[in-house]
Length: 460
Image (cartoon, rainbow, N blue to C red; front, side):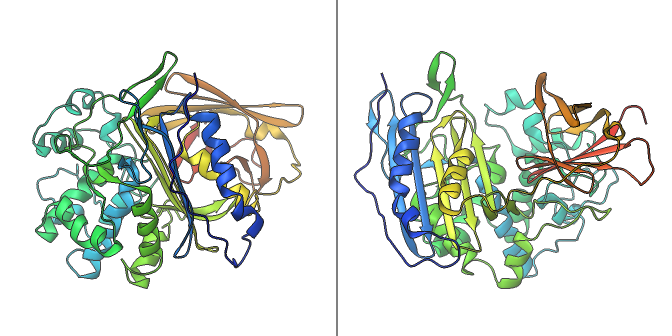
């Protein structure tokens, strides 16, 4: 049986909006949210919370379903959720604050702040930790973490595990999303500030933003209105797997609410947390060492989404998924939290809201592809997050077909040509390195907002 519970607190404000915002669509936000919840809550999701704001005004704030299925506790409007990797923008803001106070240098080697960490002879700047371009292997992708993640141990144990892993690439050559970098950043914050990560964030980020119900997540403390996390399976919803919050740490251990995250976006993007110069550092992606542009900045992605220019980050941790997106040109924030690991996820819901408000002006235009498609064909392979990624490129009926093999799963795609040896599928760009007159491409770059993989032609 499908069960749907709606909180009684809903705020809808009709305003004269600048830019592309359409008043009629804004007034229909609640109906859209209701339809999304009716489709998912009670089947794949235990509970769902959605918040939308424009500037200082809340346009929509509504919760659905249950915070606790066992006791049939309705989801409060501001239930506390674990926000996973949305934590990373808080960690990056903390690093930038300390940089602004001249307590650290973004371009200094991390051994200056973590002298006991073995970098295997490589120079790794703090900046390279912030955008996942350090080459350090992510600890959540290590087999050993399966056991460590459920135990309370000294953080040095994980530090020793990380430093023994071979680098996935040389610093600055690629972008593979990894939680090890942000684990190290948490230690750097504690080293240079003299405070625990939890204390620093509470005093310097939560308090100035007015985030009264946010904290470092706890495995033992009683937290008022804390939602229970669930996992979706073929057999239905189950309790989420346990994880010890010693480990997600500065990469993913913060807890928050819809109201607090709306307040955070307002404070962060309106200059209340960082100076204008520091804020520009936060949101501006730095190219790889060879000059190749990327779309991940510092704890946030910043790119042209189908619905417009966005600054955002998602999060996932046992039992919880989250997404926090800011549209800088329209000054609109969308936050989606769900207390269930289940598809399609908060990013897909955020997309629906964005399309409802702004349409899809950012979809790249398809272009006519000329020349011999055989030059793109081949089998390309290289390191990706937690796996070796292999893409087989073939041609059929004047189109390219991609067969992507990753973590024992296959996915078939037919990309759209958008020019300059580049093809797209959604937010992912497939960029073939091909010089004029060349008969084949030796390298395929697979670029997404949070990754940039370099795959080499096995025939090269």
